[in-house]
Image (cartoon, rainbow, N blue to C red; front, side):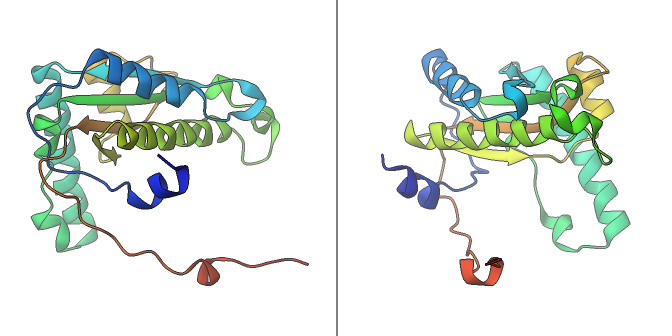
Length: 190
């Protein structure tokens, strides 16, 4: 699959079939993640692969708590109808964890320690493209409190849960979301 086609065709999936994802597919997706760029090649990412239903239920409960909190704080009515049930039905959830100690030279900069998060984001993008190439649906999900997720999964308190990547066969065709024209988002300094 051409990389430009993959980038244009990949969509966020919130409806997963109950079919399991093979270990081989999970390993290919994780390997793709590790080929992402990172500051000083520190590779400040780690992964937890969640297939256990009880753990997924706990992650769902945390996301639902965050959804309700965000609805109350923001007043955004769309959050009232936003369902996070897919966290219970996604066959696999990969938790991407960043290590602030592996951030690169930015640790000495004024605003500091964000390089590891950018590296994790690049790894997540690779995971999505790999999943798409393997015929799987995926979703980048961040609706959780970091400390609560640490507690649920026993994550080292010095490390940062960056995102959840939900994986599985899509139960329906994901919705195409519009993109703004690149000219609206680009400035050239010549």
